[in-house]
Length: 149
Image (cartoon, rainbow, N blue to C red; front, side):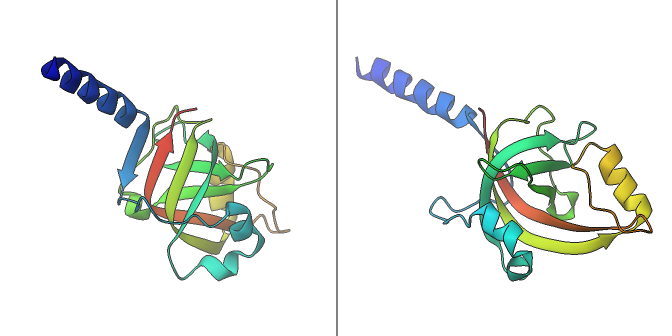
């Protein structure tokens, strides 16, 4: 009987573990998330130190899973998340999943060619300058945890 209970517990634990996909550096279980809406509202405040953000994955790079578009609950726009040093990728079928990511916000001006590439890859439309360049607020994650729908 004890062996049967132990086997059931092991199966239940394995099934629960399958619900979370982890990539990159581990995120502390007790790490408090900063609302992604706050990060998007004032990105300059989040460029120096790592923060944990949460949201829904709207889009994923269909070629390799090398970026994801993360949107706060109830919002229409989000942030493109890339992965530190291209050290890991996310599943290409993870659109719609919940995500928790730890990293830093970046703010940079993309060249016209870079902006074209980002849009051609399927990321959100960028607000373009007259010369085709675009300011992008993005997030570089050192680690992510993804949960299926």
